[in-house]
Amino acid sequence: MKKSINAVLIAALGLGLGSTVSPAFGQPFQSDSDWTWSAHSNCAPPRSDSVAWVEENGLRFLRFQLRDGDIGNCPTDNERAHSERFNKPYSERAEWRGPAFASEPGSYELSFNVRFLQGFDQTRVDETFFQIKDCPTSAVPVMAKIGQWETARGERARIKFELGPGTGNTRQHSQFISNDVLDGEWHTVTAQFYTGEPMRLAVQIDGIPVLPETPFGTAPQCGQPSLRIGIYRPGDLDGNSHSIVDYDNVNVRPLPGE
Image (cartoon, rainbow, N blue to C red; front, side):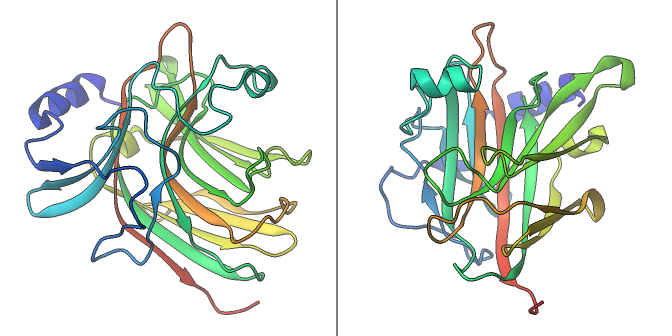
């Protein structure tokens, strides 16, 4: 990541050269004209500007940001037992969630445009940018994360997928990706997800595979699976970065049957 360039970019944007509107928590599901997916805040955001619709150069998109100490308002975010289990003091969270997949097994393609503006540099690679989940427990089908800058490797980011975390049968895939993905430019994420047994997931960024099709044990089904976008990360007593990420064109469509 070109941190100095991004710092200039953020200063120029001022988080609002374009107009911003922060949706109130508890509002009905929201979407945009170029989205086929609708959603709302997973839990009350930590600040009034943690989630906001932004209009910039004729483009309308959704922005998420977390500052150090932005503890989430979901039940486990500041729960001692949960924090001790996952070796963190608390959880920081600004997310939207919405139904995306039917309860019956099926294949889907999800896609969205994403722009990472700053942050996402945790060395433990534990900062999510999308999740698939349906249970209120920590048993999650998919967690997609970015972090871990390596100066010896040209400050490239590492992307990590945790498949079936919390189920006792977690699969992980981790690899370095080009720093171009975190350069303040828009990039396209596409994924193919099969919800049956076993579940399968493949992911591409700008058409380049970052996760080959990978089967993994089905997480417990608690209802209609949901897609989550935004930021979820462990708190850090030494301080977390100020992370900002934008989303647009969030779409989910069924694929032909197996």
